[in-house]
Length: 172
Image (cartoon, rainbow, N blue to C red):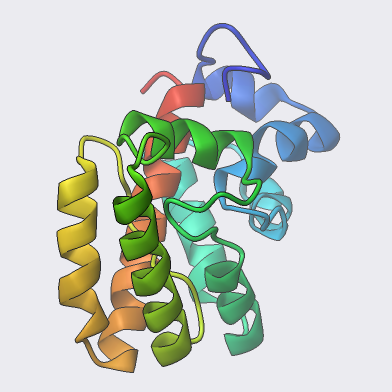
């Protein structure tokens, strides 16, 4: 979000944004899923960052199964060499996923493929504060999971990622 603003905004400032600016600023919070911000606009005014985040999560909870699957699938593979959003690139870089050895890259690539084949969406994890070793271990453990529990875990991780991203935009 640093490319959109140099200082974090207050919730009062967020409440005062016009719809287009609100969507421009908050649309990227959920990976390639600006519909969440668009649907949240009507719930203003928000009392706090937490209230805004809860309103956004309600949009996910109330979404159709196809919309939720699209949200899950909108996330990039971790440690990919493909182009990802600026936010994802920044988050992955912070976890060291941009400096993998060839063997580590191959390992992540194989786990990403295995996970996606089993669950139908990429492995999703809030990587802030984690090392590439932590992430690899989480992938290994979660590949063994069951589809419904893994879907719930992925959505919980999306909630955490979006909370962290909102915290980079808005002062609490």
